[in-house]
Length: 220
Image (tube, helix red, strand yellow):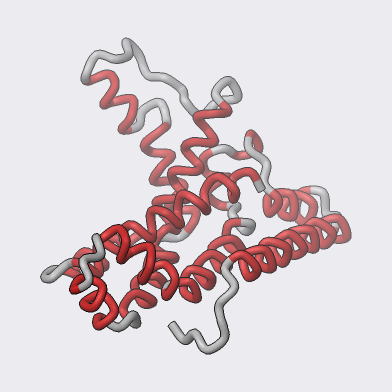
């Protein structure tokens, strides 16, 4: 739950910023979008292993820190003594891996906003920031709603990334389901935790639907 609350808002802001940048590009838009969505083709476990290679003792981060003289010997970041760094590593891996899910939805939503609205606002002297607040955000509400709901649901299913980077150091709800089902062979407890995940997902979905209520007749 803590991981989802920390990661999803950051991903929403990043995806919104990236989508705005992509839609403003005159050339190379498809290439930039393709590069930014590459992490979508990487499995959860593979993403976790990639970031493990960055944070482990013989990884890229230690090599870089040693190269600039910041440390004398490799630092073991992913240990019980550094829970904050473990959480940061998991959050970074998940942000890198899954932000593109929201990005694709928001880019599609922005593509449906009529350009005439922006042209009219520009004629009346509206600044880019005001056009974003008064045109883009309101008309993007249905797409933003969809992106947030999908991302929140998937955030509560995070497991492989956590296992690769934190193991049992950073427990998650889906990890509890796995432990009860396969380690403790307790199907009843596993089902109970799965129902808790379902209930939390439904609760957040209803909250998002209420907060980003789409007016009748909106189609974008």
